Figure 1 (cartoon, helix red, strand yellow):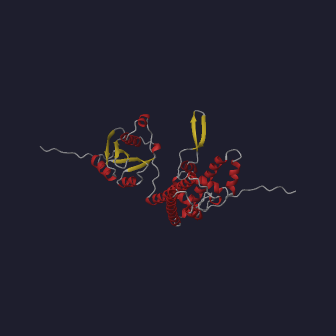
Figure 2: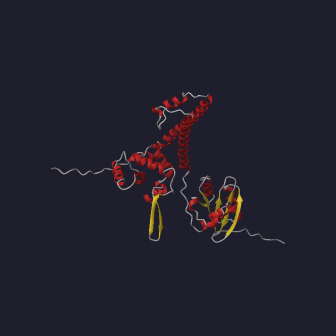
Amino acid sequence: MLTQTRTPDFSGQVLYVGIDTHKRNWKVSVRTRNLHLKTFSMDPSPEQLNRYMNNHYPKGTYKSVYEAGFAGYHIHRKLTSYNFNNIIVNPADVPSTNKERDRKSDPIDSAKLSRELANQSLTGIFVPDVHHEALRCLHRLYEQNTQRTTQIKNRIKGYLHFVGIKLPDEFDRPYWSNNFLKFLSTISFADTSYKTVMDAHITDLNLARNKRNALLREIRKVSKDIPEIQLLITVPGVGLLTAFTLYAELVDIKRFRNSDHLASYVGLVPSTQSTGTTVTVGGVTKRHSQHLRSTLIESAWIAIRNDGALLYAYNELTKHMKKTDAIIRIAKKLLNRIRFVWKNKTAYVKGVVAVESAPKT
């Protein structure tokens, strides 16, 4: 007897795929709008997922999601090339029930992602192209190396204090010159093992400084060919590194709807809690870009020394609030100026403060 096998056809049907990514394997959940179909484990491979979906749900429309993190963006790009409608979401923005938070597991996480994708409650983050992602990696490596340099410096200062060596006044300052590094190598210790430890610290510091300088040279080289960076450095308080940081992290200023959207992304907005008719406004929000907010606040301190309009605004704000709160407001004003320069592709023009002259007698 001959039997006829029908090939399943999912044309016109949407399959929602939640992917919980890990280095060694993925947990994947597949569902329709109203029905959970399957949760399974697989190798961490977009190619394998594409084959699986085409074999089990051929001709369907595939919508997928995974959380931002160590996996990066290459999975997104690969899935998109396979005609998956994929998004990447901030883990903090994924709605979770109390049970899901209490009994967290990889299958539960993938099922939650597919469910919320089907419910249309997820919003994807911005995904940069390969070029801008590479610039972002360059900036973050420079940032990490700067932090490592600071850690080694603190380690050396702590070590000197531990063994009872006080630095001369001319060297007791934040900036470490080449003369200071030479001085460190000439310090006499009571035991040769002390000297061995100090030499190891100095070697680590020199390696970190050399790497940091090499990265800085590359940043300067790359920045010459980016017109947006050349415009941004015309803004008071924005040097080359700050401009490169802004460009690498924001990528495209037009992706922000307005200045408030941009300020919220950076983290220069207050936290608020509203209950009934009561609205409580707290300090600056905890949710922020760790690579941008501190940079802009540091730039704001420099900007008020170079722009009369910003200095005037700062002085007015300090009349009724703390200086640390006032500088947050100045940083937001500075961000608005940066947005204007970038969006309109025009160099910055310093503000002018009108001073009323005394009447003639």
